[in-house]
Length: 84
Image 1 (cartoon, rainbow, N blue to C red):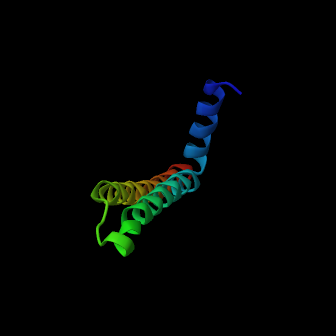
Image 2 (image 1 turned 120 degrees about the vertical axis):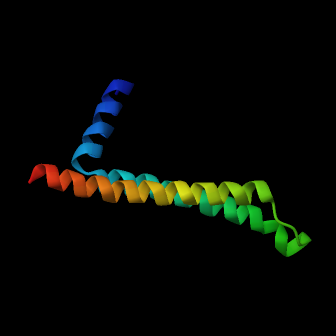
């Protein structure tokens, strides 16, 4: 499949089922945030310090995940209103 086909497929899913698409993307962001948080806090048990760059990255990905989820909820309500 070429990139144009992928873009059309993602656009169709985003239009018909925005909650599914944005929840999936939010879940990916939360998984990345969790991995970064584990990476940031791992040296705390051995050395008593935290990797701040990874901790800030975890916070940023958490905020991105929350925004994606809220956008999915909003678009889902709007899509239902348009269909009715």
